[in-house]
Length: 609
Ligand code: AGP
Image (cartoon, rainbow, N blue to C red; front, side, top):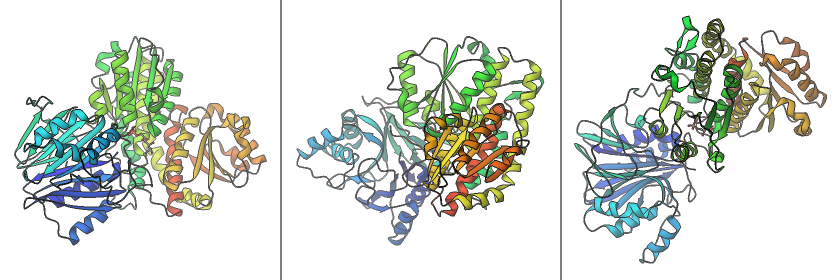
């Protein structure tokens, strides 16, 4: 869950590397470092904290390099410190190396290295790689890497420089993302192509156990037998959209306000109003593949898992197909039972979530399953592992807490549910009605965003509480889980999403005047029941913030604060309600003075298991 970057070419390797790190900061930001070759020496600079701290130190010392590698860290082994920050070095300071991933057998390797009389300076697993390459180095740095790689177990994306080779970077990857950007007299390596997209969109994705030798005007790739490997140059379709905050204080708020457009992007060109059905390029042409489906398995983590839970209600209600939704990190250890005619859907905004990728790989290997994925990042690992991908088209999501990606996932999953339903029993008119409701969402969302001031006022009133419940039924239950996660992530409040009908079986013991409840009432089918649950909360003096649709004003007299949203159909009410819970979380965090775009302990893409 770290970000690695490297540059060799005619531009300033230090400035380009710092620029690249800033675009990778979403992958971890507890410390950062840069190293490279200058006048036959390895020079480096490492700092605790964000890339901006490294940048000012680099400017202070006027760092100059002929080639650079850089790293922004999310600590796995060893606390955030300058010593543990990457790059790491061999004892002779001839090699500098950055790494993303985990070396599972670093303990035994460390013992082997110490037995060679070598002492360690850091607590990281990464340092073992630098020492091993040095032990294996007999003048040819690529051969030294070739000998070292088979000794490593676990996931790694590694880039290194050697003081005697100031014109090249050596890169190697296994189960961890590594992409090479090929420019004119310049080349880049990165965990994510967005980091160098402004410079080149010609890319090569390194596959497992391939070694790349990257020069400004020459790229060589070898397998572990040192045989050259022909790699296709791919073109990134989506350049990096505007990745500035614009007039917004935080990326998170900007991305919340982008949702009228991102929702449109999610459904644009993906439906046929006249036939009342959805259309996914490349998928809808092979509809016969969807006919035999008897069940669906959804794999995801975090917010994406919440989207999967909403999809389960949609698909079962609309298409009458049973759906199993699994948390990826749990599923892969279950010795899974996968019946024939099961469609597997993996949902991941980043496409780099290690737990989801690992579960997908096991399913493919063990059951030969076909994998459909929903993803927001072209060329990501999950996309390359999938048989078919539906892209969110949400644009880069920089805020660590997911907002626009979630609502785009819901929109796409609703269209997929519609397609399955229309292939079974839903008639054209019903399909057309559904699509009409779907196309109203951007205006509904705009209207809710226009009420942000009222939501901020409520957020200020409740910002002092340390415990919250988010309650809902049916579609509003997973929507409650998502609303609670937002509040947890960016304001560090203990927020619990719960099925409203389940409160009386224990958790209602926690209700008191110190524990507000956010009531998600939009699900029309269960509104009456929801109202009784709120009376139970009220009877125990629990403050209530109700998110209601137009027409549900009857709850106003039993709650403390109300946020009214436009009415939509139950399958789509997650989108409208979630805009409110996103804003609520944002404004509570703002009131509490928390760091919003990069909350403590988190990273945008969890690339370690
Ligand atoms: C969401 O706000 C969190 N940042 C986190 O739960 C995230 O959804 C999860 O890590 C899954 O990420 P993915 O969608 O990129 O797989």
